[in-house]
Image (cartoon, rainbow, N blue to C red; front, side, top):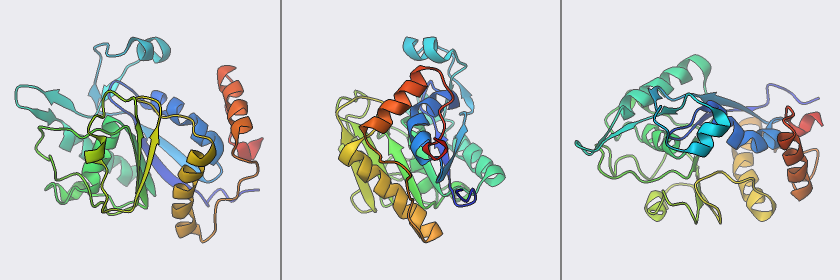
Length: 249
């Protein structure tokens, strides 16, 4: 039996016009694979995003949906960013500490800011986790922290970008070469693909470094992380089954 205490604790932040259920859906494949080694937590953003932004998301998940920041086009600023950082920090104080942070799109932007909070003048929001994963996280121009919340982070960072993503044209500017950086570029768009093969090896190696650093042993999987495993997951998910961790199969 696995030791339930030997798990990394990770907080996942969803994107704009999403909620924690959408993020759980995006991460379900990774919970299926890493559930024996990682405890995933999810948090709804504090601001309402009720205007329909994506019909597919609305039809699939129903809502309500949320945002971490609201763009003020007149002031060329992002209202609520500091308050969202404080909101996440308060959640961490109550439910943490967290070993890692995973952020999709706008959620990734919040994590960027918290990793550089001292430089941004909000040191009470500073986080220094074992790792961070930024998925489809764009560079935001025209905000008060522009340039301050990018690069030279206090922990290893993985960047995941889709080559066909219409929202991250400046991804090269968003990738910091100074930090301990791992980059995955996939062929899809503004989403989190279910990796297999060499890309999955890269993803697993990144997480395994944090796991081994904390527990002095690597993650030991019971089954091969291959396409057959992905097919098994998809059959469970499409059948609306509760998808277990592979440790329970």
